[in-house]
Image 1 (tube, one colour):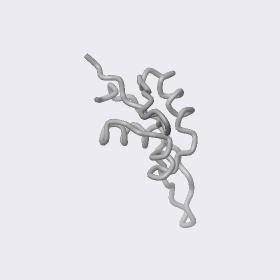
Image 2: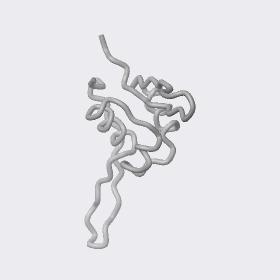
Image 3: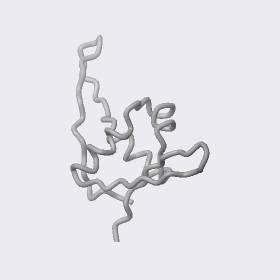
Length: 88
């Protein structure tokens, strides 16, 4: 479940001590989570990664060629889960 080495831009911010602080992009966090756990829901993205707009980030990833599929689980209280597309 790799992504052919695609990387997202890392943003740098300046800390109080004047040193640059490198911040991992939300897409990188999602990709790491998908590679580690296999799938992610909006609730998991919010509570575990601090990402509130998961569908938007997934659309951005799909646009640059990282194929992420979704599947609805459950009937009454359905949950949409996102998965990396398996490369064959």
